[in-house]
Every structure is written in C-alpha cells, then in structure tokens.
Image (tube, rainbow, N blue to C red; front, side, top):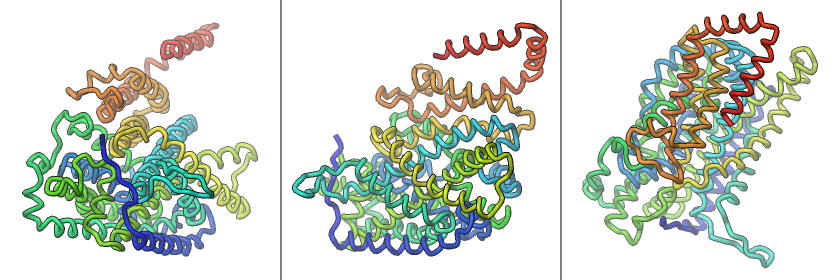
Length: 546
C-alpha cells in the first residue's frame, strides 16, 4: 500500500504560487488581445520564428505530466526513466521531410482536413471522431496529473458553514479545470505560445535547480550515485518485466505509437508548427527540440525520483520506501527546498501543466471549428463563410467550445484515475487510441497506393479488432513477448503492438486487394439482388463482431 501525503508546504509557498499564477495569466491575457480572428486564436497569425516555437514546445512537452510521471518511474526504476523521453529521434526525418511540409505548405487547419484532401470527406468524418477522442483523452490525462500534483499540498478536508468537506482528486480536478478554461477561453494560441515561451525557461531552470538542491541535500554527486542500487543506474529497463515498466512494452507503446502520435497527430504540437513563418523555421524548431531540449528535459523531469530513491535509502523515515510514486516530486521538492522556493517550483510545475492542458483545449477547439462547425454551417447555408461577421461568430463559437471541451476533459479523467500511476494511465491511453490514426497518417504520407477505401476500413475494422482486444485480452497474448498479464490492467503497453499490427494488416490487405474489390463490386452491381447481398454481408459482419 502506497503512503500518501497532505498539507505539504507553507503559507509562504501558497503566496508565491498565487503571485506566479497571476503574473502568468496577465502575461497570457496581454497577448490574447491580439486575437481578431480564428486564424489568430488558433494559429497565432502564422508568424512565429523557430526559437519561439522551440521553447514554447518545452512547456508543452515537459509540462505535459512529465514531471509527475517520470519522477514516479525514476523513483521506482531509476535512470531508465529517461528511456522513454529520448526515443523520438528516429522518426524525426519522416516528420521534417514528410509531414511538416504538408501541414505548412497546404495551410491545413486541422489533421482531419488533411484526410479529406488526401482521401475523401468520409475519411475526414471518421478521422474527426477518432481525433476528438484522442484529444479529449489527452486533456483528461493532463487534468489527472494536475490533480495528483496539487493534492499533496491540500488538506484532507476543510470546514465551510459548519459542514466538513473531503478534498478528493476529482474535486481538485474540477477547480483546476475552471481556472484553465477561463484562461484558454480568452487567450488563444498567441497567449499559449508566449506564456509557454516564458515557462519553457522557468521549467528548465526549476528542474535543474531542484536537482542541484537535491544533490546538495544528500551530500554530493558521489554520495548520491553510491546510494542508488545498481539496478537503478541502468539506462534501459528490463526486457519484459515487471509489467508496469519493461523495455519491449515501452518501445511499442511510447517509442512507436506514442512518438508518431505526438509528432504527427497531437494537434497541440502540430498547431505550434502551423504557427511558424515557414517550413525551414519549423524544421529548425523540431531539430533543436529533439537534439538539445529533450535530452536536457529528460534529466529535468526525472531527477526528483532519483533523489527521492536516494533519500529513501539514507533516511527512510523522511521518504518512506512505499511513498506514492505520483507524489514523489512534491515530497522531494518540499524536503530539499526552503519555503518560498518550494512554492516557486510547484508554481512552475502546475502552471506548466496548465499550459499543456490549455494547449490541448485550444487544439481541440480548432478541430471542432474546422471539422464540425464550419462543415455544418456550410452545408446548411450552401456557401462558404468568409465575412468578418461570420469570423466573429466563429471566434465566439471557439470560445464556447473551449468551455465544453474542458468539461468533457474532466469527465474523461474517470477513465484513467484507477491506474496506479499517471505513467501507466498515459501508456494505456497511447496504446489504445493512437494506432488507427498513426497508421492512417503514416501510410497516407509514404504510400501512394493507400486508398480511401483502405483508410476507412482501417478506421472501422481496425478499431473493431482493437475493441476485441479490449474485451478479451487473451487475443493479445501471442504479441506479449513474455510479459505477464496484469488482470486489473491487462497489457497496458504491449497492446500497442497488437493494435498497430491489426490496423496495418487491415490497411495493407485492403490496399493490395483493390483490383479484386473492384471486380466483386462490378459483379454485385450486375446482379439484380446485389444490394440485398451487400446488406446481408454487413449484417453478418456486425453480428459476428457483437
């Protein structure tokens, strides 16, 4: 049983946090006044230089639950926690010379719009549904992390009007969501980018400063290193055990599905590159981020867990070995930092987490406006909406949708809060929701013969086979590489391999049999009862699946 903490911190820390948040929100609101259109609200006017994008990505990537989840794995498994943070590099060429030029030169406003241009309106419709699920799930993970980050600083309960109220994870999430929703509703992408630029610097400074304080507290780098068990010094996790952190599962979940998902379909990240002045500026930002910022960030986000492990060995009364992994960052920061400094570190963490969430909310609103609101309005009015009056309506709709998306993000927390750590919840999320879109985007980019029928079948049949794996985890067993199945959360990571395999199999099978499909289609059209045969085949397929 993990030990949890409450009431960590002092009044000085809370004052520092409140002041920090006020400054950040004023900073973002100042730039939010430049939002005169949806182009400004979502893409910042497409005018930003590479260095601005590169540093704003730091707060999006590092702030996106990284401090909490990588500190947790650093505490449980050591230096190998960095393994998943520096595995994006081998997909970088595909992004720089494949995906990035398309999203910049075509000036697409969302990923589903690409699916319509590359495939068909039906593909766009299905991609919109899947991408909205993906983004809402990502927002839910962000809110879950925020709740777990602030919960150790709050009391177990408080009294109001003579009644005692318990402080719960979901209660904390709801309050945080209200604050986040207010900020993003009035700020937009320009506010997000400039706020994240500031926080990118602050996060790196706070992370390295915490590492310095921790090493000093322990007694120096030699003492720290000698305290760590040998297994905690390994750069990579064990191949197929334990179930909650193993090399092969993490490779497929994070290295393949997660990396492609983050680089190619995370609208929060993609919109940063859509806001660049040119493809070259975007390439500079991406290269700088992968080669320089991510290795530094891997140390920044994981070191609290390493420090916590060392302290738990030298002074187990101070940091019990059974401390809740998701709370270790807060516990260590409180131990090694003086009041005020701890408040600054926690303010930087929580504000960065909020930046990540508001980036995702902004991106999801962009998908709604571009792929739901505009097509519906165009269909009803039978003409394009180009007037200034219509753009004002769209801007208002974007802000209203941000509020609704925030609420749906809070609801999605319920799907993940039962996992032992944020890391495992995030791994399950990646394994489950990214493969269909990842396969469709990747094959659409690099395989000319990949057809509209194939992408639609990938979305429908691929997802159906994934649901089979969710319903019966034994289907995934042949892919498990010897990983033992956890009955509570079966195959959280390696299911990414199964899901990717079935989506690729469906995509390739449908593409290479295009000629045969055309022949069968012609044969059915020639029959008087051809339509009835098709309906019967569909009914049999649905009944078989159910």
